[in-house]
Image (cartoon, rainbow, N blue to C red; front, side, top):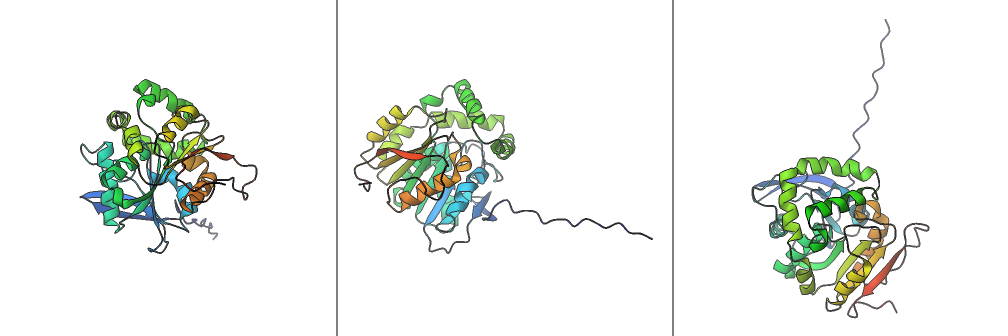
Amino acid sequence: MSTKSVPRRLPRRPASSLSERWTVVDGVDVFYRESPTPPDAPAMMHVHGFGLSGRYLLPTAERLADEFHTLVPDLPGFGRSGKVPGGLDIPDLARDAARFLDDRGIETVTLVGNSMGCPVILEFAHHYPERIDRAVLVSPAGGAYNRPLRRAVGQLTRDGGREPPRMMRVATPDYLRFGVPSTFKMFSALTSYPSLERLLELRIPTLVVIGDRDPLLPGPDRVREVAAATDNHVLVVRIEGAAHAINFSHPGELAHIIRLFMADRPIVDDPASPGHASLYEIHRGRHLPSTD
């Protein structure tokens, strides 16, 4: 009597090298990822964009996890975390970020945001200035340049064709889970938020990273003009060939830039990545360490 061999079931590949965990913050289930880095390492939290979870931030976050106590939460209302009735605006999300850090016992942190995550960081710095060491704003979104909604949809459509195809496999489930009603509400909150006013208030070292193929951002002249008005504490770096989701599409280059910024070192191309996208400064505040 012959028996058929049963194929071995391979273990499920972990979604991330970071630990996946749950906690409860103000009665809401919050899903997050956390590095096993010793707790005395500097804390760094990555803040996701519009309608998305923290999943697409992992390629960059994982590259920095050996040096920083790394956290990547899904903010309430996004991803796998629970929803909060009426909680979808920038001040609410900044408060949620602070409450999450309270839950994790973290007093001060460097915040790394992409897209909508950047206004959340600006609002966090506005209300909790003593709790943020540095800010990293990657592809900041919001404001008049993204209004009205049909214009933003067109920008997102163009951006979709410039991102790696695998980004859609990550983003689509998140967008579907987020839903249409939440999209309209969050878009209104995001585009009416005073991002420029908050940026001008910042008094901490701030890194802004943009891509030269990002249709959601104004041109480099406008970016340079805004940066020059920020009392010389802002460093702006541009990555050639990058669109909006830099944390996903160019994680090696972005992690390299962040390491240099955190160490107050000049921004130069990564010699370990020849042939990859070039990066260069387009503005450096005089109060930041010089490249000379």
